[in-house]
Structures are given as C-alpha cells and as structure tokens.
Image (tube, rainbow over all chains, first blue to last red; front, side):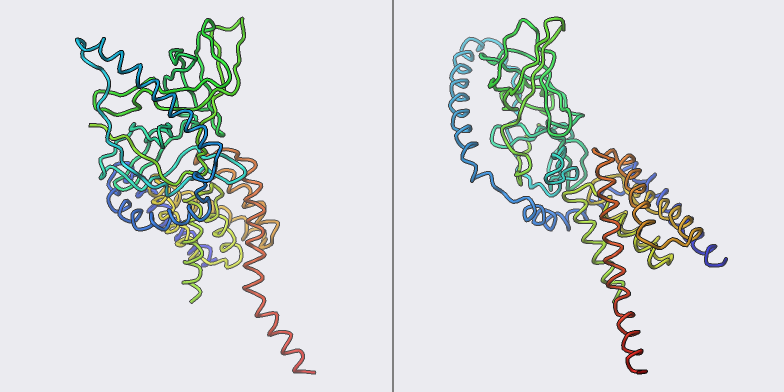
Length: 263
Length: 148
C-alpha cells in the first residue's frame, strides 16, 4: 500500500513539474537553454542522419541530365527576362532583393520512415541567431525545398512542399504563364490546383514558383523549380483543373539545403 | 553501472527518434522498464528523456514528458491491478500508447505505426528479459548440478 502511495506521489510531482515546464515553454523562456543543448547534439544528429540516409545526389545520372536540361531552359528564361527588363526600366522593379543564401545541414527528418513514408519536414542546424525568420524560403540547386516553420535560436524546421500545411502560388505551362495554387497533400504528394480549364497544361510541364516575397524579403522569389507535372486531372464539369506534381529532387537523399535570407 | 547503461540506451533512443523516425522508441523502452522493473525511478527516466526528446525535436518543452509520465502511470495502475508483466500486456500497452502518442503529436499513418510499435515493444521486452534474467537462470542450473 505504501509502495502504491509513493509511486502516486512521484507521479504527481513529475506531472506537475512537466505541466509547469510546458506552460512556461509557450512563453519562450526556455528557448536559449534548449537551443544550447540542441546545438551540442546537432553534429551528432547530422552524422547519424548521413550514415542512415547516405548522400547519393551525385551518383544519380538521370537527375544530372534533367539538371542540364533545366539549366538550359532557365538560361533561356533569363534571356527573356533581360529583354523584358529594358521595357520595365522606367518602372520600379518589384522583385525582391533577397539573394543571400545560407547553407544549413539537415540534422533531422522526424516524419520520415525509410521505405514506409516520405519526409514532410526537416530540422536544420541554423536558427534565429543566424538571421533566419519564419517564412524564409529553402532551396537546393534552384529547386524549392520548402519554407521555414518553427524556429529556435540554433535550429529550425522546414515544411517541405509536400507538407499538408504548404500552399503557395505557382506557374506552369509551355510559356510558364499558367497560374495555379500548389498544395501539399502529405505522403510526398503535391498537386497544382485552381488552374483555369481554358489553360493548357500537360505531362512534363515544369512548375515554378510565382514569387510570394513580402516587404521584408521573406518568402520564395519567382522562378524556383518546384517540380514537373506527371498527371493532369481535367473534368469539363469542374471549374478548375488540377495536376499532380513530382519534385525533381529526392528529398530522402538531401543532407544540405540553402536558406534564402530576407533583409 | 546499470543506470549508466540505461541512460545510454535512452539517449540513443532519443537521438534515433528525433533524427529520422516517428516510432516512439523512447516510450516503448519506458513501458518495458516499467513492466519489468516495476520501480518508480522509471517516472524520472520518462521525465528527463521526454525533455531531451522535446529539445531535439523542436517541440514545446515538457509536452513529451507530460505524455510519458501520464501514460506510464495509467499503464502502471493496470499492470499492478492485473499483475501482467508479460509480452501480451506490453504488446497491448505499446499499441495503445503509441496510437495516442501519434494522435497527440499529429503524426501520419497512425494505425500502421502503432502496430509496428507494438511488435517493437514486444521485441524489446523479450530482449530485456533475456539479458536481465539469463544470468539468474544459469546460476540456478549451476547450483542444481553442484547438489548432484
């Protein structure tokens, strides 16, 4: 009977302490000490993740070919941009000036079970002390990876494009002018929705970000590659058509990404 | 010595769970420790490992500890009531504990992961039981041979 009483009292003590800590943590009072502890373990996490997942980006020849083709298309796009710039000279450019890229190591992928599920978020070893803010875009070689969600002093969480909470405007089509809304569906699936029925989109069209940078330079600049359309769903009786988008990069093999810093 | 080994095992489980999986390994180990050891120090292990998990997973500090301590207390009540320190009880406790854990922390594929967690929990039970009580069984055999 005494044993039961002592375990109950121990439970009450830890329950109350946990509750107090949980309540206080919402105020941000524990950010600094927990960030310090997390920074001690982040190199270990990074090496552990590298050991488990491995880095096969350089050995994938199909992606290399795709990358070369996309680089050419992007350079054509850049030429068109230059031509347009001469026409826009008397108008103030609305493009953001957020061009600083901060490299960050992926130290965790909490929702990822190799062979069973796709990652929906990453934990990076950079945080608010490195100038990162919630909403900053994250890229890898001109491919959009996601955006910064939760953030602490020395670490941050990236919500990948396939995450259910991910939603932003994008453009696709032959001329890259067809607008739609890119939505993560979870489980590694992405769709582009709200595309007008009158627009022509087909399998193989590349999807780019339309740009949603705010006044502070946070967000995605336009022209980042999101993926490629692999199937189109067009119902004449519906208002819009939608398509499934497949990213060009394998998120399961990523070990490093780049954060687009705002002003 | 045993405390250091248990601390190391829990630390490794925290690192694995925070780095690349959503299977609640820490919680499964704690359930087994509670069922096999039946000591109240498991609550303190749950509290501190929960804090470590929250720090590395960028969750609100104390959320995992709160869950671990509460569920372990409930499991402890049932375990004491039915004197059930066997693999079947661990299987059921692991399944239900993991199921609610994943709902609370908004994970995907809840049912599949809960089933997997239940099997992993039972495996951990057999592993701990084997290493913990193997030496005692051997001693018993030696003594009976000596009597002969």
